Each structure stands twice: as C-alpha cells, then as structure tokens.
Length: 104
Image 1 (cartoon, rainbow, N blue to C red):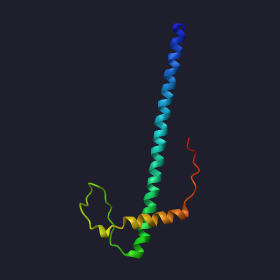
Image 2 (cartoon, rainbow, N blue to C red):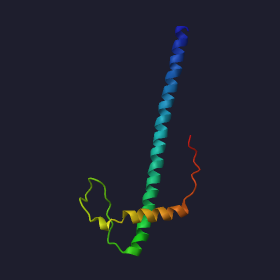
Image 3 (cartoon, rainbow, N blue to C red):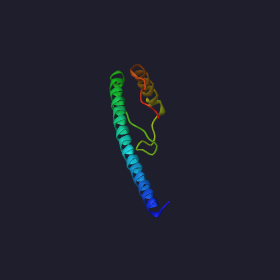
C-alpha cells in the first residue's frame, strides 16, 4: 500500500467513524424522545385510572412513595399500591395492542 493509499484509507475510516458517532447520537436522541412520550402516556393513563379509582373510594389524596423521599413512614394498611396496580393491569389487559415493532 502506497502512502497515498494509506492516507486515503485512513480518511475513509475516519469518515465512517464520524458517521457512526453521528448515527449513535441521533439514535440516542430519538430513543430519548420516544421514552419521554411513552412516560408521558403512562403517567396520563395512571392519572386517569387514579381519578376513576378515587370516584369509587373517595380519597382526599394519594401520596407517592420512593425510598429516601418525603414520606418517612406510613401505616401499611393504608397502602393502596397493590389495588391500583391490579386495577391498572386489569384495565390495560382489555386495551392492550400486540407489539408490532421490529426488535432487531
């Protein structure tokens, strides 16, 4: 391989590397946007179900809990998480669409 061919090959490889980095960044951005849309829809679905659930149960408020969050202790008998999750799953099972996205 001549020095000119080596420089040409090196330039081609550098271009391919730049293209791959740009593709990776573009794919990561698209994935981030899709994730944000899915999370927003999930929150809306949970919120809608919580409003429906509350009509039947009449809570003044329902608190979210995360380890290290603002709620240090709560009476476990007041925890409606399992009921909410079961209700969401039951409701979702009736409206779930088959996943038609390609996973390659």
